[in-house]
Length: 148
Image (cartoon, rainbow, N blue to C red; front, side):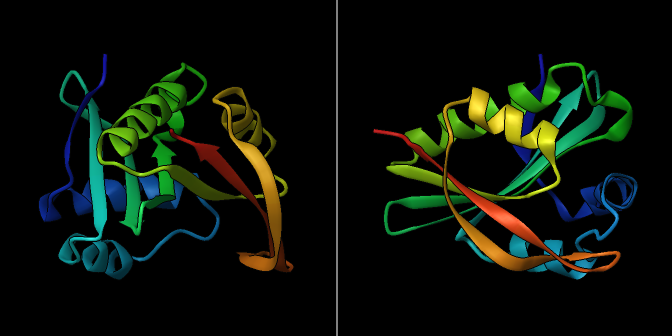
């Protein structure tokens, strides 16, 4: 069972190591630092037996929430942790009063798309040239989950 807690600035070295392993175009440490400073962002880490193995960043405003980053340490992927983290994010977002949870996902990220669809998210749109890619830009699919 994963233990969730608020992200701390002291977690950033471990988070950056995971971020750089997991993504070809990772967030910068400055982005995480900025998110930690603003109360509209809920930044959480997920530990298993003391090991930081996942983290999330969610923004909330006007009854909506937006899952901006969800990441599982690459060595721990494929073990159901992504689903467990996503389920915790959904439950917490619902408890915090949001009526809809949104997210974007790379068109090419089939495993994440399957995860979101299995959790009840629906594709509601597309953002063109949203993500940086090795060869220019990549589109994002927009997903939404009603929480009411």
